[in-house]
Image 1 (tube, rainbow, N blue to C red):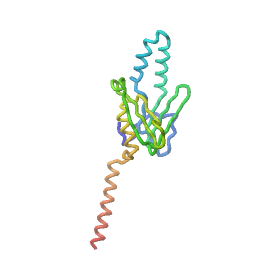
Image 2 (image 1 turned 90 degrees about the vertical axis):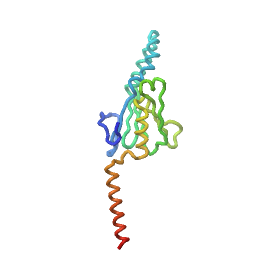
Image 3 (image 1 turned 135 degrees about the vertical axis):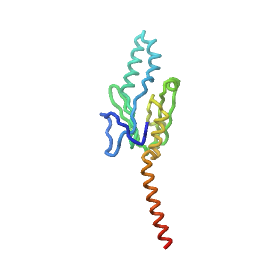
Image 4 (image 1 turned 135 degrees about the horizontal axis):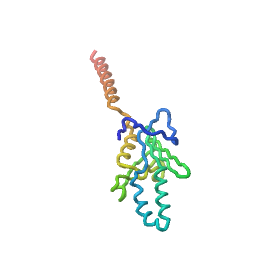
Length: 173
């Protein structure tokens, strides 16, 4: 997962981006996040309740999407209706991740995002694959270091060096 160049991602009919905004990462809950629903749902399927648990978990997974752009993070969810949350990087105060028992075994976890002035977690990416990588990607974007390409740094350093040489020449005269 490279944060220097935006990946090619599918178009999202629910996502409206600004002109200078582009998608850096997108994902869905991990396939293995259905394991707990299956563990509970299969034995209860004798009572028909288990089928509702399994179908509900599957529909929730299929209708949840996460997107990280150059400006913000987005979380879309909803089976019968749609809810889209957006948090700009400038408002993010804290990013944490956690992995439960199944998450550690199958490689998924939750990434929680807290904002300035908010009480508690404002936005969560549930059961996302490689939660540590997603947390680091968002953290780099929040700190603003993701847009600095090595070529840009070299160009800035060259400009500074040119100015220093000009100042030195002016002082030596």
